[in-house]
Length: 445
Image (cartoon, rainbow, N blue to C red; front, side):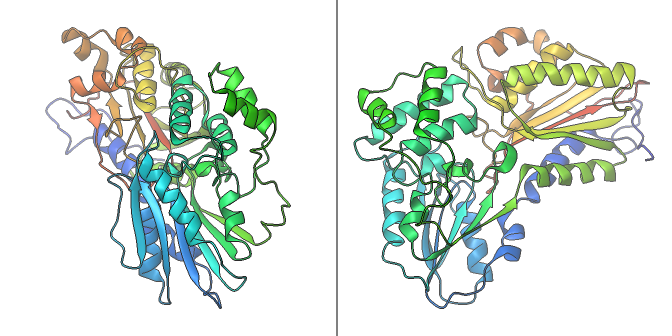
C-alpha cells in the first residue's frame, strides 16, 4: 500500500500532510457509525407474526434500536424498553424509560417489573422482539426474592471496583436476578422470542450481554460464589444462602420454557474494528487488528501495547511502520486511588508512561458508548509530547496513574475526547499509530 505523506515540515501544515489526530478521531467515529441501530436493525427484522408483536429491551442503545424498529415496521407494534439517562430517543408506539448506569436505581427496578408485566399472558401466536445492548445489567436490577435493590447496588459497586472481568461480574448479576439469566425469556413463554443484540463483551457471548435476560446460561451458582470469593467481595448471609442452596439458579440450555428463541448479533466489536481499519487504509495507512477481545487490567494492557508499539517502531516487527494497531474488548480497573477513572483513559495513561515520549507514536482510546467509567467523556488522545506537556504543567503522570486519575490527567491537557451519547455500544476502542522513523510528525492541537 502506498503511504500518505507522514512527515510534513512545520510550515507545510495539515493540508499537505496527514493530520494524525483527525485520522484517529475519524477512525473512532467510523467504529461508532458502523454500529448504529438505524444501520444495523433493518436487515434483521423478523416476518410479522400471526398474533401480536411486543418489543422489549434494555441497554444504552435500546431506545435507538426501538426507533429503528418503529421506522421499518409497518404493522401493529407495542412495547417498552429501558435505557440510560440521556440516551432516550423519542418513539411513537414503543414506550421509552430511563434509569441509572452503572449503579442501578429505583427507576431501573420499576422498568424491569414493567417489562416482565408486558410479556405476561402471551400466546404461541405472539412474537417478542427483544432489543439488547451493553448496560442492560444495571438497567434491569430486579433482585431475586429475598434480596433488595440496596443489596444489588452494594454488590454492583463492589464488583465495579474489584477488577473482575465483565464475564465474572455478569455471572454474579445473573444469579441474583429475577429477570436475567434467561428468566425474561421464560416469562415470554409460549411466545416466540427474537433477540437483536449489539455486543459489548469479549467473545460476543450472548449470556454476558446485559447478563442474558432472554438466553440460557451455562454458568452456575457455584461459579458466582467463586467470583465473590476470588475478589474477596463481602456479601450478606442472605446472598450466600441463595447461592450455596442453588435457589437462584439460572435457566439452562434445553429448558422447556426456552424452546423458541432466535438470536442475532447485529453489531460487534470486530465489526467496529474492521470499519476503523478501512478508514485507516483509505488514508494510506496499513491497519492491523490485534484482537477484538482483550481483557485484563487496563494499566497492564497499556504496558504490553507500549512494548509492541516500540518493537514496531524500532525493529519493524511484527509490522512495518507506518501502521495502525487496533484492538477492542473490555479491560478492567482495580480502584486504588480516588481519581476520576476510567478504564480506556487508564490504558492510555499507562501506555504513555511506558512509551515515555517515544518518537512518532500516537494513540486514541475510548468507549464506543461515549462514557468511559462514570464520566461523560468517551476517552482521550495520546501524542509523543503528552508527557512533556504534562510535566511542564507540574503534572506527574505516574502519580495520576496510581490514583486512577487518567480522566483528570487528559482533561488538564485538553486531550479528552467527548462525543456525547453515541446511542450504541461495542465496547472499548483502541488505535495506536506508529510513524515511519524519519523526520518529524506532529498532531494538531
